[in-house]
Image (tube, rainbow, N blue to C red):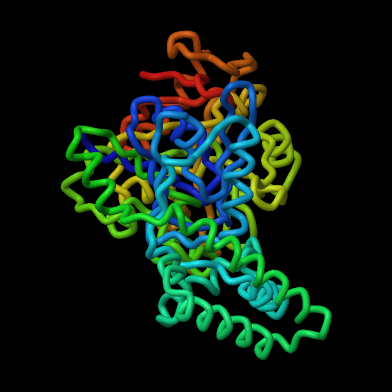
Length: 417
């Protein structure tokens, strides 16, 4: 059986959590391969809403194994809170959750460091979540990070924790009260690390065993491809890789195991934080999309910036991910617009994903809208003609089949073509 990789094709918030949960019905395991608690995946199941940050979305299904790869970063205090939240809703992860022992841990001091850096940047802020993700990755590549596996050697572990505590204090010039608070947070971090260590695992080996027994593994990405540090809107990006190729390195399997790459694409475009956004609508239309789509961050609660679908960027991300199919999400949000626009390119045939993205001027194709409420629709033939035409226009731009369409937040609010 194969590995199916699920990736976001925009700046995140495309609805990956809902679709991973939907696809997980036939999966043996769902394995998260990127990011940390800066991500927010929402799943609605059994009449309840689950907001996950690092736990794989598939864990909401009680028979699915959840794994977290080595290229992710983890705040042990936060993940215990997530585990507790699931348990309070009657969903236990014991014997189902496997976390790579190689995963890097987010020391409490990193939050202070990241927030201070954002403050120092003034008008050039990146727009991070302030959860210490960037400093965690920095220390990984500086080769003195704290790994989950270090907990099993307490002398090494404690020395690393003390080093990063003192580094944060000296770097930030904290006052006495802040130092006391940091030391308190560090003790909670140590206790949580010890508790989470029971989930430590050789994730690569576990995936190999699942595949050897003809199981299906869904590799779940975080954020979106346009936040990838290599292929995204640099420097306004995240620190962990977001594209499909990262699944292999994080989870420890070869590319020959992959049979499907599913790109998740919102029917319009949103972005949280700073950075270029060629199709942004900073007007009443953008606000209408925001309210209809409930576009507020799962992790931060920040209002998302909204705009028309950028087909040119979506075609780019579908290509770099090697998408075999695309799921178009939140199509129902576009009901009630007289006309809709899709960016098909930029003036002067320009294209850029780095700093020059600020200079891009979109060229639009205009399509008729529809008034019918399509929320919860599950049949392609029942969609208004204009809605079907919109989907087909997206498919033509991407040159990748749009095989499914999400029409609502519910687990089964999906049209398969």
